[in-house]
Every structure is written in structure tokens, then in C-alpha cells.
Length: 188
Image 1: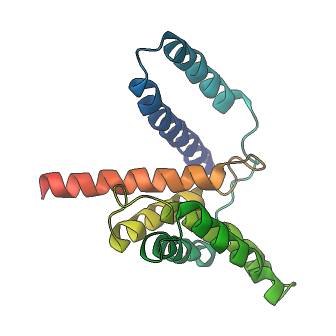
Image 2: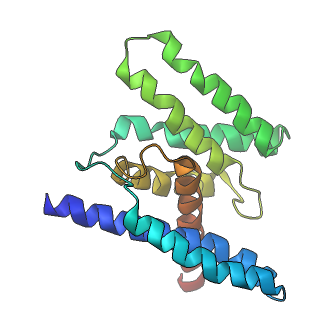
Image 3: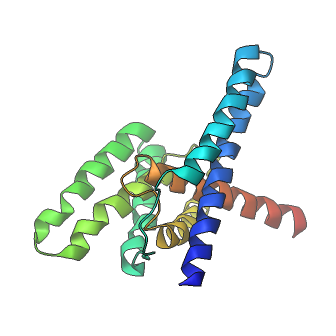
């Protein structure tokens, strides 16, 4: 069980860093505004205290099944296709996909597997919402989906009951894919 504790702590630290990476550009862009700089110094310690003090996980660490997270790339590619090729727009494409995905458990109400698919598909939809400036191709979307799937596998027990987990993990997957592509293009 020691490994589970380390996985949990590393996952929490990683998500804390992702939140800070997300907040930093917002504050950097508006660094001339004293109230935004002040709020940065207030927000960062509050986020850190939240990660340390709030019950963010169950006592037993569970892992998401690989057949569930395999639907993340499907949701990402469909959302990306609706968004960029059919020009539906990011919000409408994710909403359409989320609505359709929510109907999947109705196929067989007794299936525990089908009940888990809407969340995985919707998480992929967040990846597909990315602009072409961030996610220029389907290959990038699939790479981000892979990283997001790995994060969802190891973070099943983390942040139970808190909103924003799927979007945060999708954001983390896109950030990791961006870093991966940057390193490949820079050093290849």
C-alpha cells in the first residue's frame, strides 16, 4: 500500500502544479494590475492549503479500468472533428457529445461498464475543444488523450465529489502533450 500513497501524493502535487501553470499566465498578462497580483499571492497559498487539508481522496486508492479510459480518445477525436471540421464550435460540440454520451447507459441499465463511459467520453470532449493553435492535428489530440487517460487511471480516487476533475485532467493532458511536442521539435 506504500506505492498507493506515493502515487496519490505525486498525483496531488502534479495537479497542484497544473493549477498553478493555468493561473500563472492569467496573472502574468495582467501583472500591471495590483489587485490581480495581490490575489495571486492570496490564491496560491489557499490552493496549497486546500490540497493539504481537504479530504480529496478515499482511503483506498483505486485505479480506473483501461477499457473505460479507452473512450477518452474517441470523445476527443469526435469533439475535435465537430469543432474544427464541421465548424460547430467548441462548446456546442462538447455539449452535443456529452448529451449523446449520457444516453449510453440506457443501452443496458444493468451494465456497470456502460455507466462509466459518459464521464470518459466527456473528458475527451474537453480535449477536443482545444483550438487549432494549441491542438493542430488529430495526432496531437490522440497524444493528449493518451496522457489524460494515464492521469485518469491513477487519479480515480482523487478529488471524489469535487467538480472540475475531468476538465482539469484534460487540461493537464493537453499541457503534457504540448510539452512532449515541444521537446520533440526542439531536440529532434
